[in-house]
Image: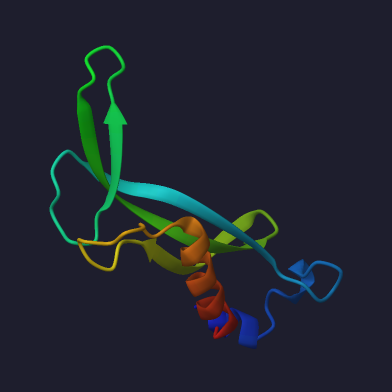
Length: 108
């Protein structure tokens, strides 16, 4: 839908300085679990200072790119922040997901 609106130049009056599009990027959490349910889950460990007990939460996050046109906001692309496998030395993050998302947006 967004491609068609851009191709038909329906949103041209909303460009910034007549040539730029207002695009916002926002990361958000989708799901949180107390037990691991897939190999792509992000992991966060919390340690209770009083008891010393460590609790682990498993999560799924997504990075969203949205086109701002006046009072409206259109979702143009999404990139999940997820681990490639269960045994990763460093988890995926918003910065890495942004690089992937930027490549996807440039192809639109």
